[in-house]
Length: 636
Image 1 (cartoon, rainbow, N blue to C red):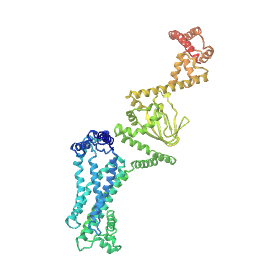
Image 2: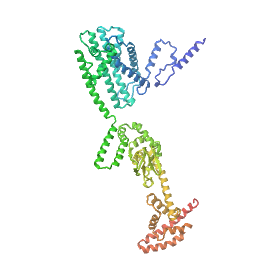
Image 3: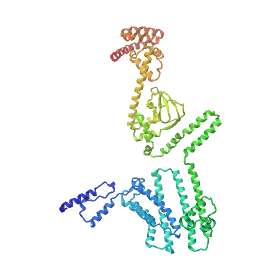
Image 4: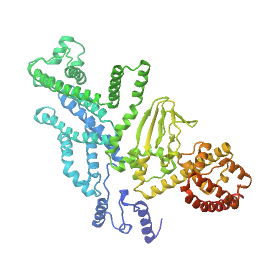
């Protein structure tokens, strides 16, 4: 467009920077310096720079690259196709009309070359470092050259050379060409390696995978036997031997269309029919060997297929037996229960309930077995497994929220699954319960799946915890966490221990205030005594009695306190007199004290010294009581 030479160079640099933006090392892109773009692309410096940039490409990691996962799946199907196509081509190489699949052979060769390139840029695991992969492309290429390249070259070069040579079907070179096709089967190692990777990535059950492997092996064995049986007849016919083959004998005995005994697909169908009969030992007897070569081939096939069939049946039976171990154990336990009930003479109306409990407890037994598996994992992996279960606890309980990871793992090892029958009463115990399934009732409330009770297990005082039982309305499956496990877990974690301690203080203070308030109501209703009528010592004694569970009814408590006080008059009368003006003053108390001393001296002279000491204490308590009343009067 007439731009100057300098302007053109600037535009070239800008375009190059837009096309080759320097990215991070993990982006697997080449980083090209814009200052080197003025050099011709054919120069030695430019070629060396491109080689250095290629070396900087990072290899693909199997567990992180989605492309490798898709490519492995495609490779698995292509290898499976190759395993079935190669024996079929070899078996019917001399058939008329000829069986040729040049397009398919070309596709398989191209795919093999592409797979070789992908394998060369795939990062291998580092030796003696499980889970870590090589980060240099040169290391990945060297590893592939040492381990995978010889097998891949041996599998793809023969077919390529044969197509280039263009040899005819007959003659020694033609036979060699047919047998060299079997070199494709060398890549079956790759097929089994991908299958092993799927065990980890797909999470397929080993029992199901074992059955699938055996079924695939049986199908492939039938295919190989059918190809061998067809090739035997075709080779005998091509060699010019004056003997009757099994297709001719079958055609003479049964007749039918000519294409069924001469064309490749018809002959393969008959051979597959014979292979299935031979392997399963059915043996209808319509397809039989007609010459000594066929007898030898048939005997070898029967020997191999019979052993494979016996091993397959034994392995499949073992897999099916262990496919559902939980149900097998449950059925065995149910049989034991039936024997027990029969021997102990349990009534028939209770037997159904016992059997039902055994079947309902299958899930709990499975969780107990899973606990053993979880404990065999590392602490971090244990957190992955049990995080969902502990999340229910943590979301429902305040002092369990935002727990540290190590504490979650520690608490999860103490979880215990339990199952209760309908109408069963769960008595209070010092544990935290989470309902997994079922319905229960407590304190007039209905508890369903996800609800918890026993959050006051952190309180050491039994009288502050809720002692109301739980009644099961259906089969109730719960997870329980003992309080001892929680205290042991937080003992080594100061932050969590402070959090639990603060929750313990708040809950204990709230429960204590509620209990003391209920005790005050009982005193006011039963004896007409208000808490403000008590002195400081009496209030302290009331608090202690309430928190220790010694306060049940007001009258017994008043009588016990009167005996301990040593007074001959009724507390109810003295407090009723004090209801208007809070009792006597210091002088009244001092005037009443000598009478008490005299009465106590007559009753027990040895207590005179103690009572004299109590006079001074009584005066001090009276002063404190007046100060306390003065402070409480405005509030009331």
